[in-house]
Amino acid sequence: MTTMTAETTSGAKTNNKTHEPLQQLAHELWQRAKDSQHYWVGIAGGPGSGKSTCAREVALVLNSLQPNCCLVIPMDGYHCSQDTLLEQFGEEGLRRKGAPFTFDTTALVQDLRHAQEAKQRMYFPDYSRETSRPVPDAIAFDPHTHRIILVEGLYLLHTRDPAWAPLQEMWDERWWVEVPSREEQIERVVQRAFRTWNSLKKELWGDGVEGARKRTLYNDVPNMETIAYCRECADVIIETGSKECRVYHRMDDNDKTLD
Image 1 (cartoon, rainbow, N blue to C red):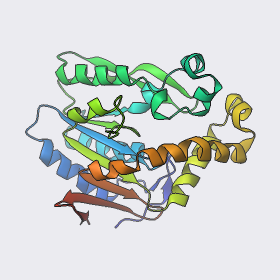
Image 2 (cartoon, rainbow, N blue to C red):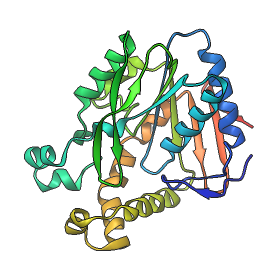
Image 3 (cartoon, helix red, strand yellow):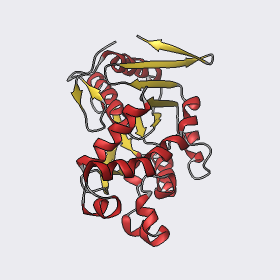
Image 4 (cartoon, helix red, strand yellow):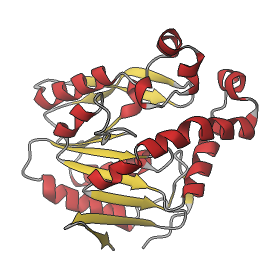
């Protein structure tokens, strides 16, 4: 196992090089996808689990094997706007931002279906944590070069919600990212929220770290619990602990460690 030492934006820790378990996972994914024109991986996990970090590191390895072969698409680009949340749900919509009903799932499903049939370049939105807003048309998908597409977000394996269930037919492979310690995961989310604390969040939740903690316990923890069952849907499970990363493959209902 590889000890991870540098802080990332998600709160997960990693060294400056792609650590060995994810590097090995990337090479195995490369082999599984080598005969596919396009290979789609859905990466889910609770808030602060390290989904974005894992996706970026795996993509880095894949793109070193073949330039521009891998693209990462974040689900967070499909957050509903603040105006939409206020109009549809009032202030509670802002307080629950990040819950399943606060995303434009119709657009997400439509765009992913379009991408799977696309013959020309198309664009996906990204999300800015600095402004807490989606960034339209920020990610270019080229069907002629991008063979492996990693889509990451909380609800990509959320089969129990009719709005999210249609995504399940799109994945060639399903990954679940988790933190061994619930307390560590909650603290990651608190610190991440605090780093981008703004006047609107202060108005809703109060000042600083305590406000960020109130928000996390009110919104992020319930979201985490809503999708906990999705672990059972995954082909690959990735643990992002504070000192090491571990990768497991689901085989015959048993977890096989990737060392």
